[in-house]
Length: 67
Image 1: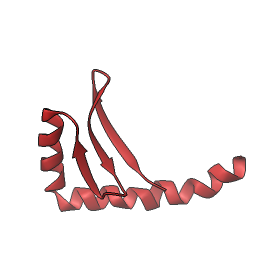
Image 2 (image 1 turned 180 degrees about the vertical axis):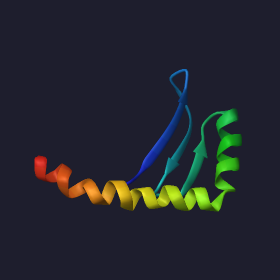
Image 3 (image 1 turned 90 degrees about the vertical axis):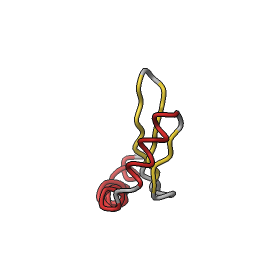
């Protein structure tokens, strides 16, 4: 299971957080700057890594039981 949070502007993805990497990755010049800024905040990264447990792992049994 992987938690992904993507950021878009004008239908172009400029940055993404991936729980498997544990950090942000930028795809545009602006996205690279934002990713560096967000990656420097360890408390924000810890919060997003906890989202995997809070949101994904909690609901996986519900989603697969409906299939």
